[in-house]
Every structure is written in structure tokens, then in C-alpha cells.
Image 1 (cartoon, helix red, strand yellow):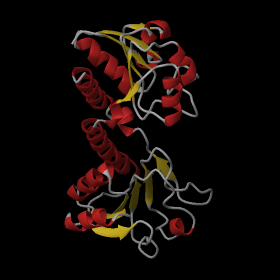
Image 2 (cartoon, rainbow, N blue to C red):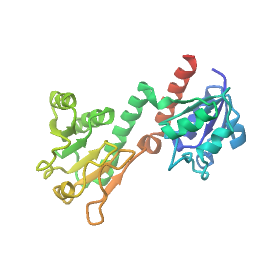
Image 3 (cartoon, rainbow, N blue to C red):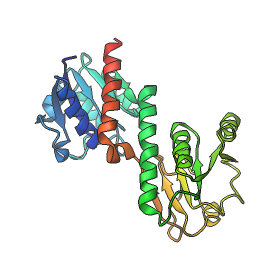
Length: 276
């Protein structure tokens, strides 16, 4: 594959993505990645004129603003630089951005909807969560009571890794089928809406649910030295002024495993382009 790619915005994983694409023999122009020395030409005009425009994961930082270190670039302004002849790919595309693009005759394809990418991202997130926990705990995971909130891709993989390190794992979910899988895999199963009176022994809690789960009275039931790690894109553990510290560890693949995360995005993009 030899195409011209424009990689715009994002974090270090997008910088690594630009390097990987160039190593494959593609022409790559970037914008907003100068901090990570991604190489090549850093120009909004040239990147936005590429045959394939790769926008970051997630696409937006804030309301209607491109996820980019180089300053506020409204997505509506960016889309006006693009044309329907280009392939435009982005991660976690919000409805507002999809509408902005469609109004200009553009189609934005969401590469994060690819299952192989979502699984790879979940694996990197789970591994990163273990790293965050080990860096902040003053004890080992061996023998520690750990609670994982949510049993989607990340919750499943994180529970397995914690158990593999000797932690005593409980997982909380809402759906009966998820609770059945939690029990079948050897974890303690808790209903996520009935956590009362079950929180007093946990040394670490990991949240994967992008909605309020732990707050107020529930937080008060946790041990004072319990480590709270929120992995969700929207906070699920309330950070209260007098409560325990909550580590908001979102976007771990981009921070802790950018090259692995970039390789997964590259592969997903190649699959999309070859499936035309």
C-alpha cells in the first residue's frame, strides 16, 4: 500500500502511527504532532489535502474541538478544508461531528468501531491499569481484594490480569449474562446497582463504566486507603473534596503503550482501505 496520509491531531500514538505509515513506504504529512517529533512535514494545509485523512482517537477534545495539542481547531472549520473525494477516518466520532461532516457531503468512518482495534485497545488499557495500580499501591496485588466495575472488553481483560497476579477479584455488572460469566470465570459477582455493604474490604477499585457509579455514601464505605482508578472516558467515580483521591487514568494506550496502540490503529486503517 502506497498512499498519501494526513495524520492530524491526537497524542503520542498518532505520532507513532505517522512513523509506522512512513516505514511502510507511504507519504505522510502531519499536523499537531510536533511535540513528539513524528517526522515529515507538519502542516495543516498539506495534511488536510492528503488522499487519506486520519483524525485522532478520540476525535474531539471538548465540545466540537479537534483533539489536538497545537491549539483549538473546531471540527466544523477542519471539515470545510476537506472534500468528498478523500477518505476520512477518525476514532469515537460523536453525532455532532458526523452531522457537521454530512452537511458538507463528507463521510467520516469510525475506525474504533472495528472489533479488532477495540480488543487491542482494551488489552493495552488493562495492562496499563495494572501498571498504574502497581505504581500507586504501597503493597502487592498478590492477595489484594480488587473490584472491577463493568464487565465489557476492558473489565474482562483487567479481571483476568489481576487474578493472574494473585489478586482476589470481584467484578460488578448489570446484565444477568455478564454476572453469569463473572461467576463462571471464578470471580465474585456483584450487581453494579446493589453495591451497598460489599465495599468494605477492597484495596483497589477500577472503574470501566462511563457513567456515575461510585459516589457519596458508596465512597464512604470503602477503606480509607483504597486505591481508586477510573479508566472511563467519562468519570464513573466521583472525585469529592474530602473523599479519597481518584486517579483518572483515561487514554492509557496512548500514554503508556503508544507504539502498540498505533500499530493496532494502522492495521485497522489498512483493513478498512482494502475492504473497499
